[in-house]
Image (cartoon, helix red, strand yellow):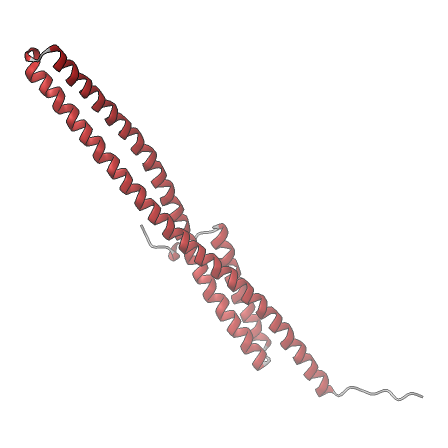
Length: 198
């Protein structure tokens, strides 16, 4: 009859703990990947927010330049119209015709600048929308990074202490961090306390 070797219970327990440590280490690596994705999302949201703000500011400066030109042409047109009314029939016909033509040209330029500034205003408001959307997304990524970093630390502690409850706690934190990361990209829900009141 063959002799059967019964495994040592302490050795079985040790192997089980090693398996636990390997599994937790693998899960911790997944946490780190999600943290990287969250970090990238936060960095991109910040860059897009700043770029949109800069472009929006440029558009508003361009808008102001158009407004100034529009007012300049309006003032010149009104001045010419006032001169035409004041001098009336005292002007030679060719001079009167030239002033009327100039007033008409100033009126056309005023209308052109008025139309152009509307397009610029629309573009500036679109850029402000991009800025605001990225401004809304950024805090979710920031908070996700905090939860994921703590989850990584807690799962490392669970390996060292061989504590399953600590590992489960790290899983809860990682789920919260992952949810916040997904929300940073998709904006599915809104946490009012994360945003400055406007």
